[in-house]
Length: 396
Image 1 (tube, rainbow, N blue to C red):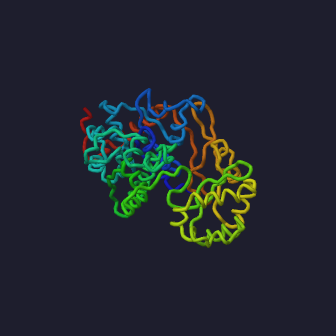
Image 2: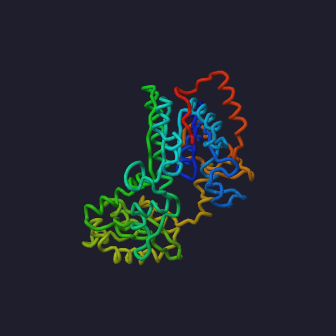
Image 3: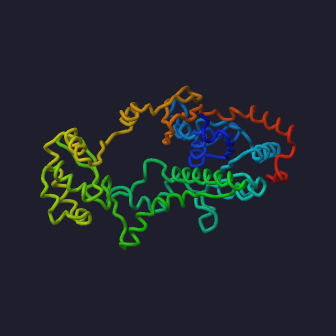
């Protein structure tokens, strides 16, 4: 069976996480992704760490199955090569520093004017226009600016998220925009230019706490591992000292929890707990009651009771436990992927399509495919001299 995107060519002038993650998801499903990198040094994310036998774990995560083309895009010959590539591309993605792409004529709007069938995506920190449009943005700083740290962590200590949620959200919305563009082009024959910013992406993720704050006139409280506005929902120690997490979503579950898990249906009808709002208001005494019951059982016994009542629950695993998780192993959710330092097991992409195996090709070295791609470009020039409707812009 053909891969869903095996007729799509993507050119990505990318660095860090957001744009590379978007293009990697396209590569996972068959798109040819040509990654433009600085000669010799490449994407600076290659040097974030050396955890994977000398390679950056974040770079390996976001760059499998791509071809690396090393180009100095300010040089005339390199720009001519890039223009030829763009004439044959379906998608272009860039996340250069603020204003850099526009100065080079490589912003989405300029490119679609030259290549009307192109789906072109600008990724930035804060979007075009407004007082922050020229401001650099990194994941932690956007978490700060959007108020995420104000709701995350304990009452005493605001905390960043341990993964780059602003970058991940942005990459996924860029992917969404690209797929919409390809669908529209299939109907109209026309591409389009669009933008996604880290700030806008994480602002969308902050909708619930923003609307809650506006509606209540007070912010969502930082609640650590608890849920800020639902109870009981969070961590509870069992008698063996291990922590079990569970969450109640509705009144039916609350009643089943009391009857089957606690073995005491009278708790469900206690006037302090008959609605979620009352349970949140009386959280401390409610949680003390639950801990008292759980102290008599091991964590396995608590989980068995929760499962019997069909109450969602989970164990507090560390990352080592995730790597060996029985659900991953049973479903064969790893594949071996080649890198400069040898093969590494990597997770499959989250989308599962029956009968189709995603692409899991190697992570490229800097400029690994430069000679091959430039040879293709030269052949293209020989067979079709005019690759765009206008000449390449002045890169100076």
